[in-house]
Length: 274
Ligand SMILES: Cc1cc2nc3c(=O)[nH]c(=O)nc-3n(C[C@H](O)[C@H](O)[C@H](O)COP(=O)(O)OP(=O)(O)OC[C@H]3O[C@@H](n4cnc5c(N)ncnc54)[C@H](O)[C@@H]3O)c2cc1C
Image (cartoon, rainbow, N blue to C red; front, side, top):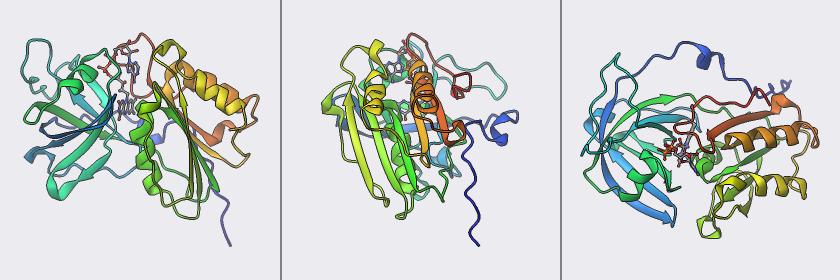
């Protein structure tokens, strides 16, 4: 007999609550830079220290340490030393263990050590990489998956889309600053994607997503939602989904990927307070 599908918890998994063991930093070099769109770069990182770097869940994360102003390359962090101030969180998009390579897609949003580094990245430049951290486990029994987020979540969405079975249905709703950021998305599951444009004003983050959800993009009662975007927008959209649109909290996983006006927003903002 088929077992009922377990609810997708919006709380972090137990493993995420355990004290985090810091993995040793790995020295990596840029091997390729690909321009995906005006504000998105795909950067391939490689190096002998990537031996053993494996990622099991989609939407996992890694930490990258960028050079501080005046440094040509970052200093290798000490095992129990202070956290580097120029460390930021990114999604391992594709990992090729046989080639010792990992691809990371960077939004060029303007400010910040990560975004400014990515805008000038060239082959041979050095970073330190830590992780991976845990990701998302899509419910294999769910009839419909809904991925809602902005350009910073596109890499996570691509890793989730690649894992969904052909028997599932998936809808993707993505907010980008400009229509030139739209691109083709692929999945074994039948996929419908809707792109909405925020415009240049980041203060409007999430507004186009909210509007699209209110205008007919609402999830069905059985949908499983992965929601990742600006932190305050994530909370508003979570409230919209659970309030007006009547979706149980247990079917939503929320992640604040960045926060307006905040430097290095933490990687574990689940919006549980909303
Ligand atoms: C689990 C997880 C996975 C992530 N994966 C990716 C990924 O694969 N690719 C990716 O591009 N980002 C990803 N992010 C988001 C990324 O960590 C943040 O955007 C980060 O703040 C970038 O660092 P920074 O040095 O460029 O800017 P910071 O120094 O952190 O911030 C400087 C300023 O830029 C603003 N800002 C930061 N990010 C954005 C943004 N995306 N759009 C507009 N304004 C912004 C801040 O509000 C702040 O005012 C992920 C975040 C998490 C938590």
